[in-house]
Length: 280
Ligand SMILES: Cc1ncc(COP(=O)(O)O)c(C=O)c1O
Image (tube, rainbow, N blue to C red):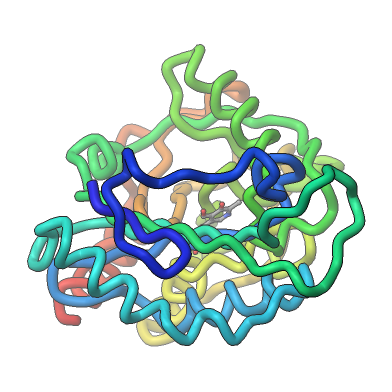
C-alpha cells in the first residue's frame, strides 16, 4: 500500500514514525475518515471543516488542510482505487518532540499521515440490520472533537465484539448520546429523534445529511435526547456514519429490544441517502 507521510508518498513499509511522535505518546492529534464512492469524495468540505475545528482546538495550524484534496486524489490513484469504493483516513498529530513532556513548543511541525483502502464487503454487511449494546459513557467531555484518543471506543467495541455485536451506544445519565463510531437515531410515531449537538457527541457529517433529507421529505426531526428508559417505546432505530451510511438497528441487546427488520421510515431515509451518494 502506498501511504502519504509528511509530504511523501511511500510504500507503507518505508513509513517510519518517531517514537517521540506526540500522537504515539499522548494521543495528541486529530483524524478524519472520508468516503470515496468511486466517483467522488463525499462531503469533502464538511470533513475538512470539522478537521479545521479540531486543529484549532489543539492549537495546530489549520492551514495545512489546504493540500488534502490533492493528497486524497493522489493516494487513490497510486493505490489503483480510482473508480472503486474506498475510504481515506487522515491523521494529524502535533509532531515529534524529544524529551517526552506534556507541554510543547509552538514551532514543532505536525506529522501528517494518510492512507486509502478499498471498502470491504464486511464494512457494508451490517447495513441490513445491526445489533448494539448500551454502555455507560466514560469518555472525556470534548466528544465533539475527533481526537485520535479512542481508548474508550476500543474497550466498548471490544466488549460488544465479545457478544458478537459490532457497536456500543454511549449512555450518560440515562440519556442516549451516540455510538462509538456512529450517531444514533430513534423513530417514534413517525418522528425522528437524535441527540442534540453538544460537547458530548461528534457532529457527524452523515447525521447532518440525514437531518437534511428528513427536512426535504417533511419527516419531522427532533434533536432531543432519547432516554434509555423510553427506548422500548420506539418503533425504529438506525445509526449513521461515513462508512456505515444509514444502518438499521434491529436489536438492542442489553434491553432485549428486537425489531424484525428496518422500519419504513429508516428504509425511506436509507434509500434517499444512497440516491444522494450514487448521484454524486
Ligand atoms: C463518536 C462518533 N460519532 C459519530 C460518528 C459518525 O460521524 P460521520 O458521519 O462524520 O462519519 C463517528 C465517526 O467516526 C464517531 O467516531
